[in-house]
Image 1 (cartoon, rainbow, N blue to C red):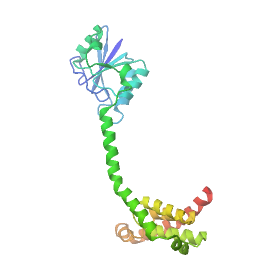
Image 2: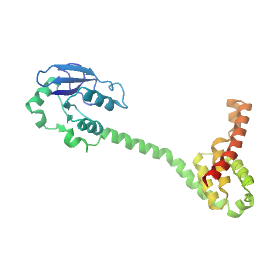
Image 3: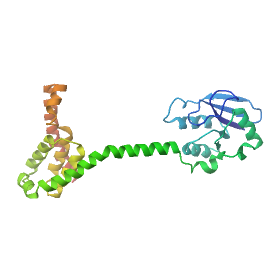
Image 4: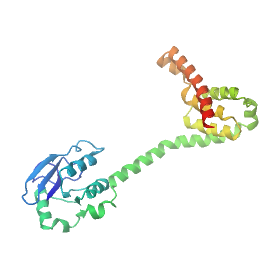
Amino acid sequence: MKIAVSADSPHLNAKVGSRFGTSKYFIIVDRDTMDFEAVANPGASTYHGSGVQAVVLVISKKVDTVLTGYCSPTAIGHLTANGIQVLEEVVGTVGEVVQMYKKGKLQRQPGVKSGLEAGVNKIDKTALIHALSNSVNQIIRLLPVLTGVVLLIGLFSSFISKELLSSVFSGNIAIDTLLGASLGSIFAGNPINSYIIGGEFLEYGISLFAVTALIISWVTVGIVQLPAEMAALGIRFALVRNAVSFALSLIIAILTVAFLT
């Protein structure tokens, strides 16, 4: 029977590693003879994917039990699926905990948990806090955009009437597509705004050809930013790029609507 113990250094006097996935070594101990092999953990130097590498290593060594400080629910699931028992919250040196395990004392030690029984339901608090932090930061970054969208809808509804748009867009596919691309080329701001304006156009009965051309040109053509683009990339390049993007927005809009409707 083989026992794998996560460890900070490659010997039996090493302390048990606090985390399964990122421990520097795994000490593979023969339960009967106490012969051992110290194997470097390939995932110790990486954060992403460290647990998977450790799981693969331990399974390849054909161990029966893993002793460690902490093991993620995902790693526990893979290990137990391969018939490997996992004991967590293990503290002490490698030699000590193996001897305790052999005598059945480790399994009864307060705080030690069996991953086979509780690991799947255990929540990785570090990962949870990290995920919540990322979610909060994303919401904070989106707040200005969402506020702008709400204000844009209000301004559009207040100042742009259906009669005004009807007088500009005649219903002719070619002309409306050209007008839509022209407006998209002039307007500036977050691309999300183009979806809002496009949706309002559709509500007012404006052709889908015009709306599609507006959205495409909005994100590919930038008349407002043209001076800055010419200064940074050269006049010729900026003019040619914008002209080609404008022409392609017309073609793509017509082909998209024609094939999807």
